Amino acid sequence: MNSLNDNFKTIRNHIRNKFCAPNLINTCIEILHKYEKTSSPEEREQIFAKYPPYYLLFIIEITLIEGDWLAKRNFNLDQNFKKLIALYHELSNCKELNFSNKAAPSAESKISLLMRKLAFQQFYHQKTMIDKNTILRQLIMFDGIQQNSILNCCFFSVHNSINIIEYLEFLFIILTNTTNINTPFKIGNNHFRQTNNIDNDYQKKFYDLLQQMSYQIHSDTAKQELKRHLGNNFNEEKYYSMGSFFKLKPLLQLENYNFIAPSKSSLIYFMEHDLINTLQTNLDPSVFADKFSHKIFEKYCYMLLKKSEQRYLNESAIKQKYPSLNDIGQQIPDALIQENNDYIIFEFKGVVPGEGIILTNTQSTIQNKAKNNINKGIRQGDNLAEKIKENDTQSNPFLIIVTYGNYLVGQNSLLKDLLGIETEYIPLSNIFVIDILEFEHLIAHIMDGNSFTETLTAVKGYNQQQVEKMGLRGRPLFFHDSLLAVAKQPRTPEFLQKKLDSKFNELINKFFPEHHHPN
Image (cartoon, rainbow, N blue to C red; front, side):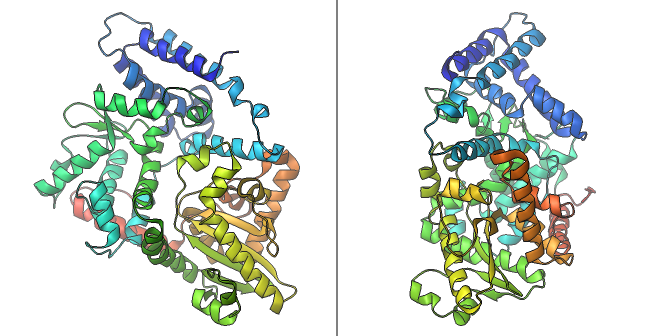
């Protein structure tokens, strides 16, 4: 059995010697767009199985580096492409991907680490629609931000004189184009002919951003950048990150300032994560925590919690009710709701995971990266649960940690496997680490008249059923999946959707005043 690196070389050589590069890239993009336009779940599943989207993006990536752009031979495109797809299946059967060969402390840990990699590789490609709320949510979060704020200054320096609101508006223009033109997901150089309120400086900034977001076809700069990403040795980490570089730069630059998104899913992932990731990466951790996590993200989460119409204590009220918490020297959780003897503790952490924490083979890497956010939040919750227990011996505490991006640490025993954390007062099965979109869906369910206790208890029961049915592989990574099983179709709360729609119409009137665009 060949190694991963040997199989990768076979794929690379096949791309070098059996294709004209533009034809191969066009073929991959056509399949990706067909997959993402297909509304039938059965047809999408068939295309996904036959042509994994992450592999098609990987083929594009290698072709940009190694492809023959001047090939004059008549290649049999269909036959050679079938062989290229078959080579993927040989690659995915390599011995390095067999977790039985890995040094991990337990079978649970091996499976946990594997499922996170597969989720990172595959899950975001399975989203079925472009979500305009991706941009609108961030515009609401950053509404009113001062031009000279440290967040704006940081972003301004990284993105060549573009401030945060301009950046989000540019993404909105791109997103609108991906849903509003005949050629799928293509942004042409004539775009601004149909917009108002755009001066030359604004237009130049927009094109500068498009170039930052793209790889230029047949470019030495793109080749070198992608070579650094692939590295000298194709290993397991590279296998699970196939195509992921399009999460960092989701566009291809064609001729005459034309840009195309090979994958709508990669474009949406970029739009969801790039702003927060830029700030988190380039600011001192304490500054990021203060200026974004505490002042912006917490404010947004409190807005959602308030609209649930459940009475809650905020951080200062928790301090007053449980003054001995101050003696521990720990920070206080952000909110607390009491429902009879059930206590729901909330901790808001406006952070996103890096690729390294998802693709790691070791628990220690996850624990090191999570110690100052998720693990810290669990300790804070457990400390509060201890004080609650002193006053109410029958208390049943739950803990919800809300992050901006999904850390894929799951629920129940997954938390112990991945984070190596033990709790004394909150059962691990009562702890839920969820992202901001999942929190919005949870709030919508509560606003339908359901309590937090009955909802979380139902989710907990569903999780246990999945483990009983499927063993360790049944442990859910995503709260969304568990909520979907016990509630209505998850959705944005009505009040929030009205705010988002209002912002949407404001931007449509600003940039597309003569063009109707459906909500």
